[in-house]
Image (cartoon, rainbow, N blue to C red; front, side):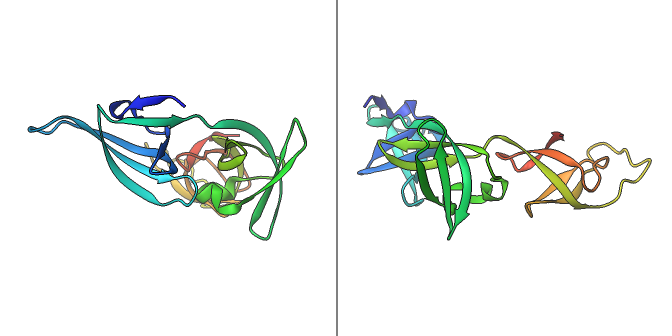
Length: 187
């Protein structure tokens, strides 16, 4: 595994640290008036979700881990477990529904999800960045209401609440950015 200096850590990097696998969530480079510069890194454990704040000096060496990414198709959910199938080998795996966190409502039948593996252990799952959803509840379109940046609340078919532009009506399909949980465009 490649070792990198403490000042080369970037958000999204996966590191082997304290006998665990950690994802760098936030990295701040700090240069105090006295002493050497360091990187203040917020880490999230990929196995249990715990968080840790750690300081890495530029002389510190950390092990960077490369996770293997595989596209897998979502089949169904059973007893809080999500079942995915490898589209090449047709192998099926079960992962806990919590692995998707607050992105879980955007998971749809047959959707292709990127699952990250460390050896044979599945550690992370990512839904596509843009997902099409139907608006099931919103205020009616009001003619002449064209004020800049006037958004209105809407409830999607998966129960998620987002802000949409005034021209979007009920029963319309929209595309939602799953990273920011915001309206992106009309479908």
